[in-house]
Length: 444
View (cartoon, rainbow, N blue to C red):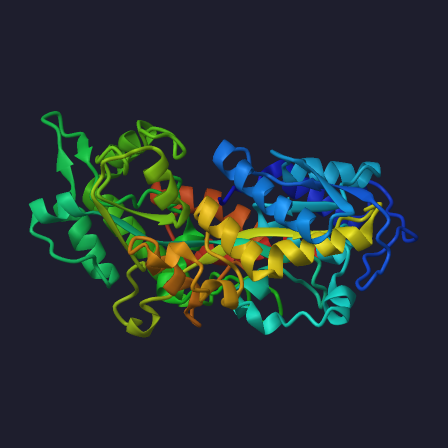
């Protein structure tokens, strides 16, 4: 499940990068593959899952690991945030293995040495990285160092309410952004006081998973140039995506959308707007299929790839992918055993398939994606996310030296834009590039 990057996490990441918050021990043991030592050992594994169903699934896969390596006992600790991980690294109390929902920190962890470079281990164990799609490889390494491995993926697509589609005379999900906007307006209904009763689509930034990074892939947008500098002003995708978004917000009524969004139940609630039938379409991750089932929602829905810009038909079927990452923090007391756990959880096909099926996330290796044992592939509502994940044009938010601040910086600007407080879009994007480049430079 995707989580937003907090300001505290960003500050901590930059502290780790600059070395100004604490020193790191260059003599700390490094991870190593191929160890024949089978002395019983207990390692600590921190992860961010908290839902009972998901935690049970993680524990089941850890039991598979213990069956393969009976001399390694894993102490699993749930609900651990990136802030806690960073604090433990600085304080010399890091776990042996840490997993995160937020790949935005990978650039900082790799460049600072906060997480150990796994390249020697991957080489020693002959791990074939071509089994991982390039978009996923992009957010799990930085600066020539692969300090994390992907541990399931979040893949985004379009959810749509079939009952509302039928009532509105719409026979199929939209494939272009023009069709999406037209369907959104057609599906939106209003109360007698003019407020929105049912929103045809959620175009409001901050409304559930409606984020710029989930929108610009429909125009083929790239956040960073090849040299690592910010690219929101020179890449036309950003201006085009924002213009489309603002036009739809205005068509549906900005004040009405603001009020509707403020009144929506939380995203993790069983009463969230799509599940209760008051939101006809939305962009969301594959995990929603499991939540809808777990919440016993009666919504009649379908899923599809996100629509794409009218002049970019070749992009249809692709989308945005992010996801969980895991690695070995600096200070791990048992790096050999820690590497065995990382390798098992992220590359063992049975382990990846088992966890993906249990928590409803996309598996991050191609063998797992195409495994006949993957039950998710047999679910027609989930299958589109697997197809998006495997599409070679699918993109991600690349790792950066600033810990993903280029995304964090864009959020307030997007809010000002939809509030009508950005008189010159191109000038505003240029200013964001300057802000991003300054933060990127600080992180180097």
